[in-house]
Length: 198
Image (tube, rainbow, N blue to C red; front, side):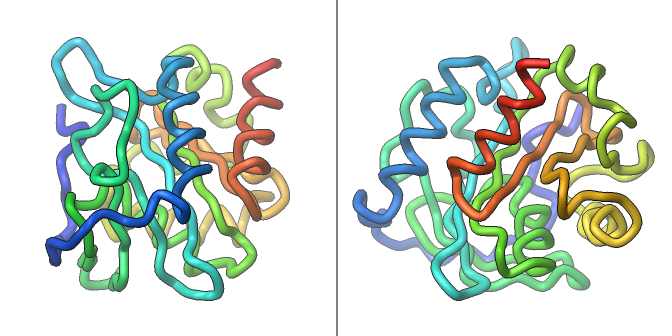
């Protein structure tokens, strides 16, 4: 099992934590999702789930850091800013007190595809995942998370399926993984809970 492992080349510029004012909403939503068991840690100690927001009018975004799934509440030092990425070269540059989540390149692909997307929520839940598998836009089972191929899958789902409208996808090759997005965290969460209630 390779959950939680960073597969991209990470250029980490260690820096001070991001201002609380900028990430207040992000921190609240992340902790609420943890309380629901949608972000957390498996019995083997590997964390799962992450959350991000785009920095206004840019390709940069703030994402929860790697290996933070076990923490019930995150502080500013558990978030980092992704300031550059190259999907083809499988590389990412982040600046902050912690390295970016292992799923950050997937977030980068979605943000780069549509400038109106400003927030992404990635959760794990086995029953939820099985219920949605191939019922909503779904990545190919052979495509692993955190790779250029997964970034390409995001583009394929936008182009060939109704991902722009549905705003939810399932990662068939990333067991339990479900991702939603929107113009705000509130919209991304609303999409998530609409399907969750079903």
